[in-house]
Image (spheres, rainbow, N blue to C red):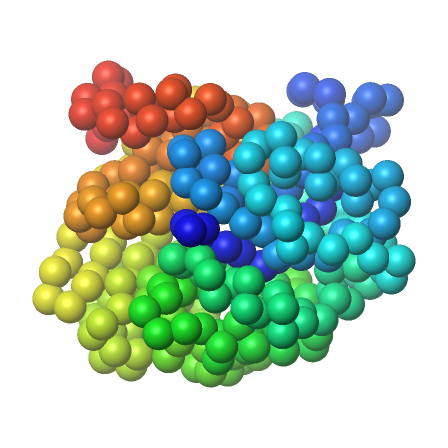
Length: 319
């Protein structure tokens, strides 16, 4: 049985040579990235069986993305190569660490944004123990939004669904995102949301426990609510169990994908029957590992990743 299936877009990522800007560099690193794919790659490297549902252009760029997913063990049985649309791409500049990073997206009219899920795709998605979706995908097109709704409404009994809000203000407005959340959250079993996204979408600022309590009152006690707080760690609420978990210090090389790594770590703990505290710890550790390496996901071998997750005393990193 498939452990985790996800539906989302993969893009090609272009980054200049280390310590150079696009203006000064004539050589760029080309990799794949995308929030849902990032989660699946990490889970696959941790030994879980994953499958990706997506649409790539039927050209050498689509084949590049397909081969990269295969390399990391992600299942691509339901990735379709299509003549419609193009490959989405994005550019990352890491030239000034204290100011963060600059990202430029070029993804309009991508093959993914035009692809409609079939009944066969939906039946395939039902086979997984857990479906993982994000708030990035429904913001890309009406087609993507309808696909997400189809997945949610066709979820089988007992199947779990995790949803990472992952709000992107350049893709849709706060009101549009909030309206969509009200529609899909009744179907969600695990909700991941950044504190800063909560403050924007729900137009209020308060402490972590109150935020999670308000979400629980609005959307139900049977869900796991995970609030991520960057360098402050995370907070989790499930029924009457509330826990906090501190973040881990790390040498920051590349912040992109840290949130996806956190989600992957938490889901790994959840799917391997760890408690909330242990799952939150896994999430924070994997996020710290990701930030210490280049690229959208922690491309380390399975033994290394698992040994780092199980290390009780990460010397010099735990706050």
